[in-house]
Image 1 (cartoon, rainbow, N blue to C red):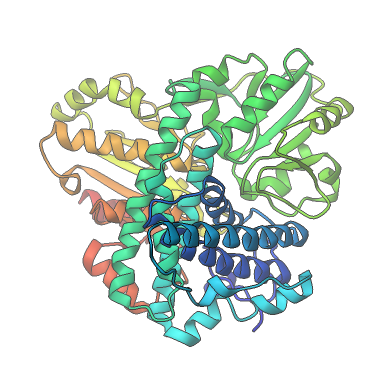
Image 2 (image 1 turned 135 degrees about the vertical axis):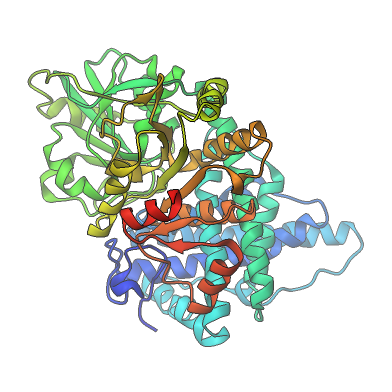
Length: 550
């Protein structure tokens, strides 16, 4: 079978990429990623069974989330690195098998031999692995189970990928929970079964949302424990004179390490995309050479990166095909990879990045200062809650809009700019993730000192948004679904799927989603989500505001 991928929002023709991914992923990488997912299910089959006897392996746990994260949109485009991941998958599967068999023997039990992915043995080279992967992907699932079951399988799988990204970020900062790993393994073991049922998978999709919520809570504790609670902070969006490094992606630990290694070297560090919220963390902004923010969201990097006069470091997903104009000064680290781009290994020695920055011209002069404000995490917003509640009771704040999610290149995404521009002056907009770049430079003013636009943070800071929402519901002694609150989501990749499943697991209803519905949901499944949760596609800004506000 040829390539077929429909995991992101911008998939070709709204149905699936078949020759090359819109993201730039070729057939070889797509097929190797399909095989890596299959192999990771095999690891989970043994890890899940071993855990029934109280046996776990930290390396198997971490591998599971790293392997899932590796297959997210815009992470790993390098066939050689994927080859390495597949070899490691076989090693981890054998390790998990031995763990399970030893635990069985100690308990006086006879170990069973799982079928399917657990039996996979890797081919000797990339060509052989590609052949193995051809019948391990999406089309095979549809052929085997039919569209509804296959799509529900993928809804769970894509949600697990998103949750794995957040779990990996937390692990990097030293925060883990074996219950989280146990649930990853349980769900992957379930997805490895030959026969699956739609009703069961729908339930497990909500369980994936619960898992994602637990992971986001873990990551929030990791981020705030390492760097303090974000505080409202103006961030410079115009450059200052000097050598420069741009940091993109999501990984705060990578940013911290780079800040330490560039201390006193005369290099200014700028954030890009989802790294913008880093400026709100007290222990990160204490580094005086964290100079500001450059550019907008990930999808504009091929236009913006040629204009940046320094080195560029990609820390997690979000990389696009690098253009020749900056190919020699862009670097990757962690799980993200592009063929031919210099990769910084686990030792996090950023010397090549620093040298590239010193060789590049940097900014010749300061530009007039302009700023945007970040840092409205749950701690900061809840500190202002009494005043917010007072303004609601006084009728000065009539409605809250949570407008957040991913950005992308479709023209239809201008909806989000127009929607926020047209929100009435007695309403407040909460935002998070890179979708905010559609409107975060708008001047919306304030309501008695409370800014009308509150930037909560990265996509994983959906936990903050949820905490704010729950606190408002408690303050007004009502349910979340009865608050004067509307959620308008933009989605692109699998972390957004994890967030959506989290909201559904918390029984949040009437979410508007755009710019289009997932290609991996059949009309039957869309109807279920509409009937059960009131999910609706966005229309026009005017129509949706009228429907919400009456």
